[in-house]
Length: 110
Length: 167
Image (tube, rainbow over all chains, first blue to last red; front, side, top):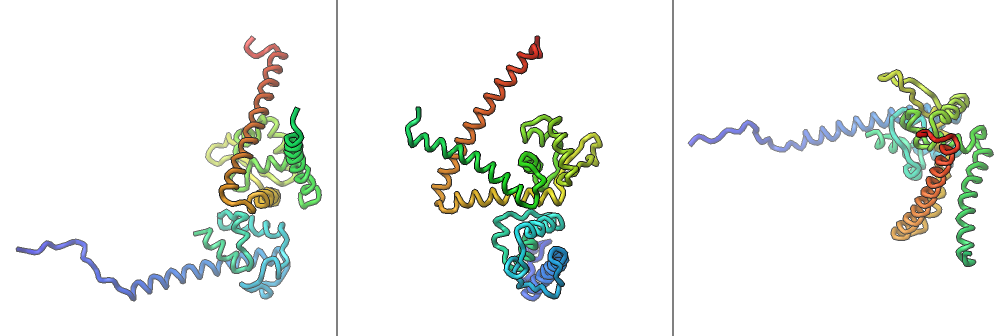
């Protein structure tokens, strides 16, 4: 008896291809986070008058940059408009550093 | 006549209503948005920080007529808290939305509400929170009911004074 031929050949899992796909996705995420970081730097330097070289991912928004609540909301409103996202006060409570803002915007815009 | 502990409860309730308004007013007058009145702030609240609204839906949210809202919006447009634009799909429809400055005022005001809610709810466990929320909801519904009752009576008197629409 002739064996039934399937249209959908079952391919063997290829760990190398999987690793490559994960690595590609990580690259895309990294690039997106870099873009967010750059636009955040522009907003922060406009608000504070500081130079981008004075600000690092680990710089703290309140302790180091001295943001008051109005400046925090200026940043929030600008980020919401630019990335079409919504940032609640609960979200903001988790933010301490510049990198935290980048991560929050990145996950909010996914 | 209420017994002393119920009298104290009634006084506390009324103090809360008064003090919330007074605190909001003081925060406004001392803050960055001192050219805004509480009524104007509540108009910004009814428009909301994200979506554009029509005049009629905003008026309905505030429980006022579109004529009254138009006057308020004119003022808020002049103060640069609100912008008006014509709907691209239907040019007859005018939409309103908050400007960057309007969104900032909204967020700063909302922060007071967040602080208030957190101060009240954070010390409570989940069942206590649910109980408090339900009790406050009862008060809210009762006051809204009374307000509507008096508003309806007032409308009936106005209609009677003007001879009524049907007669």
